[in-house]
Length: 98
Image (tube, helix red, strand yellow):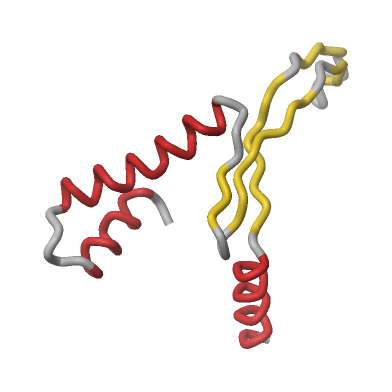
């Protein structure tokens, strides 16, 4: 699902809201999560999961095509841990398919 699909789905569930308002709500939601992660914070949505960041140290790596040694800079990456309810719902859904 992409952002446009999410807006369409929410529009179908809430036909009384204009599409522009739904787009603004979705954007505000993602912008708030992003801003918190940029600040080094954590976002927890009960039953869904937790967004946080992980720091990676600088390291030496190899280009797989040429074998040349390259330096990879330190970086901060987003990290997601699914909540217990989300894990259970996905596992139950997979069990139904099998």
